[in-house]
Amino acid sequence: MSDRDAPSWDDLRPSWDLYRKMLDSPHVSPARREATFWALEKLERRMGVDWLERYWEVSGHVPYEVNLGSAHVSALGNLLDFALRFAVLDGVSGVGKIQREMRRDLRDDRRRHCALQLEVGALAAREGYKVTFEDRFHPGALPSDIVLRKDEQVLRVETFAIMPDKA
Image 1 (spheres, rainbow, N blue to C red):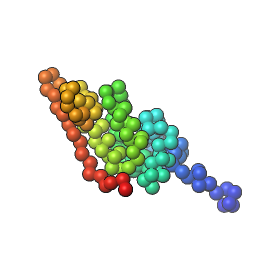
Image 2: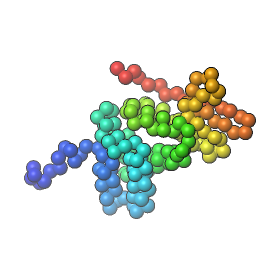
Image 3: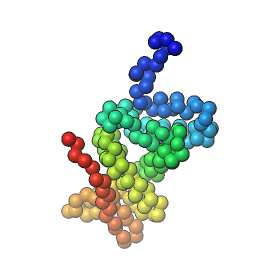
Image 4: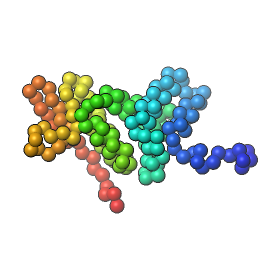
């Protein structure tokens, strides 16, 4: 291979297109390819075209569920779960706040905290709760990560992730 034929470093920077190209492998089944394409498209729409590259610049890597989704079963499950949570919670009050936080704060710990909020919200929605994020359950209260309402029941949920300082 000559230097002229070698890929440039820009070709290797993480992008949604790069991960879609990885699906061209003959080792990727058609069903896996279709599911992964769907998840990548949904996440690109939610997180933005430049999210993977910005994440890589800040964290030194791409979120593992995206990076390994086309090659490893457990990572694909996590990738699909990540995209499905947004799909299930589409239109829920406050989900945009979580999405914006994930787009702005590119630390792994912050992404995991937000993913936990989405997981709890999606599971509660499946059980028939009305879900809101970063909501005050009454006007004088501080916002809760998640507020779940069903009949007369109101549950305030705080999710926690232990994170190092940004320093």
